[in-house]
Length: 149
Image (cartoon, rainbow, N blue to C red; front, side, top):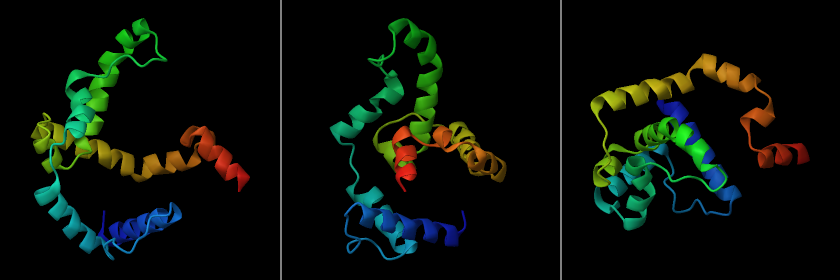
């Protein structure tokens, strides 16, 4: 993404924080300042906290059978779901977080993740996404919220 897009996303995120009652006073004013803040957090503050280790433990162990899913169905679905969930979860983490949490990740996986991300950011995919019905793109709660106006 170009720097102007990143700056726009940063400013829009501040708007969302305000909508949820979070003050933007302590937030960095620009995306460049946010990057400095983020880098400092990654290098000096981030730790492998037990709750983080627990949360990403599913990446290496696989997810347990969800309550709403019959165990037989999960046995069929989990060999596809678990590697995909691990790929998306691990790939979406900053390299420093992956290292701290001892998550397996290779250069080949990184290249594959970057290609995957580029595909989902591509114009053809966005063109198609924008033309899907709202009920397909959003949760029922969001659709009802938009309907209310």
